[in-house]
Length: 597
Image (tube, rainbow, N blue to C red; front, side):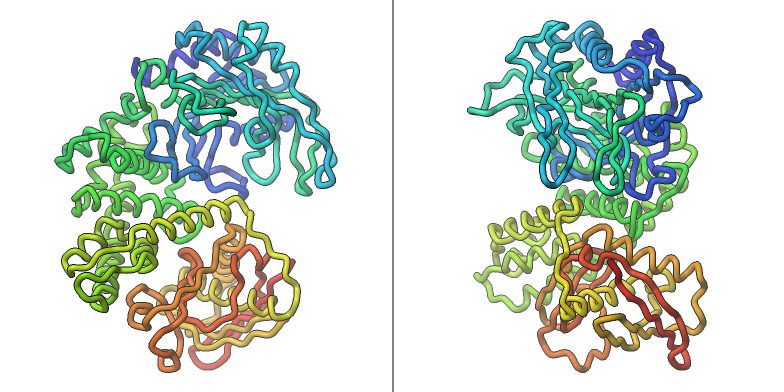
């Protein structure tokens, strides 16, 4: 079966049960600053899940374009994606657990044809009252009884807690509730004691998630019971299509296989078990990139917000293609394949094709220049080594993180110089970086220091963010002319010929606060000043710096040569506010600002 047939089959099944089809919303959410992208079909339905009447009625069905980057490191296996199509059906105060479970079971067994004994389901085990949360949420005995009624055995039903079987809200606040998830048993053996659907061994693949929205999470973290109960479901089109066709991965479906074949043609490589991860990363990321660029809201690569995510995806594609031996710009040809595959269902892709091509061309050129600077930095690092010596893992990781050098490229350059690379150390650095990035995205890095020295460190970090934001808004010609910091405020002088407009000030403040909200780690590295310059770090009064300098990096918001002190993570800054923008001297402007709880 092909994707078009599965889409039609799903929609028809629910239309026959009183649901009305609604169109896919934009990938860029409306009026929701808490998330960058539409991550689920329920995003455009939040007002209706909270009680507003939907014009199409109480039973809805849709196929929604989605972007998720929380498990981007999993991309490359058979089933995880950054972009995917979510099949969803909703009850807005109509049916609830019993009918929802029955319809899901019937679709999976009667329509898709999955044998009942190949299914496993999970149910919410409850949440006991604690000091940190006043609610006591009961064990979902109802869902258990309804799964038993359709014919599942006890050994197919698993109870899990908040992490596995509680969904939402999509942002900081909104509708949420316990869920029941459906899994397909791949037929492999249990990996050991405790193995079940929550295990990552690969025995079980998640198919569908039915959320029983009974609560609304408020800004203070508490849960209010919704006036009416809703059902929100989501199922990956890619996964159910692969399972229906008895395929080992989503990449064998007609949604993705033609992109793989295009890559085979472009690279001249066979698609094998040894290189399938690289093929899959390029395939998945380019699909996400093409859909983001093809969206009517026309997001472009940048260092902030959705543009930042887009830029990182494109650059990861370029890096990966280089490891596959493809240095020229193949992005356009891959995007054309994706547009051809999807334009009939998503006409915005063909309508915005010119924009997609234009942005991919620009970003390839920009990143090519970055890689050129990286070659210079690599030459400096390798020139300090004698044949037979090893390039440190930290140096190899810096080339990867700053310039997008894949390890294979650094190895190639090192081999030409007769040196090797400390791969184990490189992988350790990479793992730490991934864990920190993931934790930061989840908001796990908290402030908590209150004395003046720590406040000064935060303000110092804020000047870095301010400097970067000014360059983004006013142009790269802006240069720092000095700063003055005390425990109460920061003062920052910069070259600029005119008074900033109110809009420019709002944009600058917005970028700084975005960096704070994203919880970015502040990374300090020591390196030769030539290396720092080659890496793109900026600095003021160059003559005062010694041969080895400290470079502070704050994601893609800022990279500066500096002497200290700094916060460890931008989340410690809490909130940034500009007090005043004024003239300091001819051609120099001054901003005074504070950070607040």
